[in-house]
Length: 187
Image (cartoon, rainbow, N blue to C red; front, side):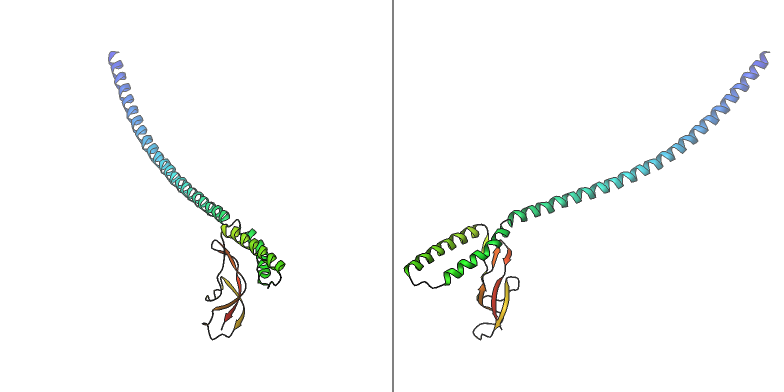
């Protein structure tokens, strides 16, 4: 019986070894499969991470552009905030200039003229402090960005396309034209 037991033990050991070898081989195959699966998963995650990183960079760049654009708009708003008010006051300036062009003969009219002139100068000073300046036109080459030509006149004493007379003054605020000068141009 001993021999049978020894043989049975040997057979059991052999079976266990075979099973162990099969299990080790299966485990190695499973490990390789898991590694392949893990590698594919890692690749997918890496690709997804790269895509998310690119999207993040695009959003960050868009936000920086938005901040710059709104900053420029804010600066322009502050810079030209008085332009509308100045535009509304230009007809008042025109009327003051017309009043000052009229001749005065009596003493009362002269006093009134001086008063109107003082008000005109004070108003011009206040507007100039806000960045308004008068566009110089007479004697300058015609510039359609600054001048509005309403007539052409023949004048041999000045060069062609030169402003010879200003009919209505033009004004700028900072570097923006509020109203173009109405002018006569030589031909």
